Image 1: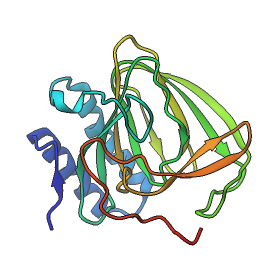
Image 2: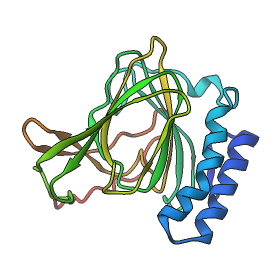
Image 3: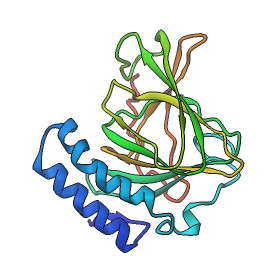
Length: 211
């Protein structure tokens, strides 16, 4: 099997090639993220490389009505993916985690982000946790942040611009097809969650059915 380049442009192929070279050269998440940041910044600074088909919003999606999660690239081992999350004006994601190291950056529009912290690490069998809102941010084009679980891994975002917002997610897993969690801070409820992709089916259900 070969890696999947759904967005098969020279920019994406060059970016992923550099990312894979960096990842293979270090086991330190902090070091690899520092090395990837300038390449990620250049991708966000170029307004033209993302084709129109990955900027659309569908009627329904795993993240909520009108929210699209377009897979742009993933490797064959499920250890690296690049996707574009498109949220219409006013759309809000559920509070969710990512369960992987990564970089998330705003490519189009504006967003508000709320970052939460769980009292204890959330395992696959957990259905309750105490969640605390630790910070709020306003994101403009070019803003991006690191994910190093558990730090900053639980959040929700809302589009505050009059146009849809598009955020780029480079993550160390196949984020649309793994089972993650959604959270309700008012009740402490935790639920299994898989966002899926708007342009690719998830072939395997990797949830622990014994949970």
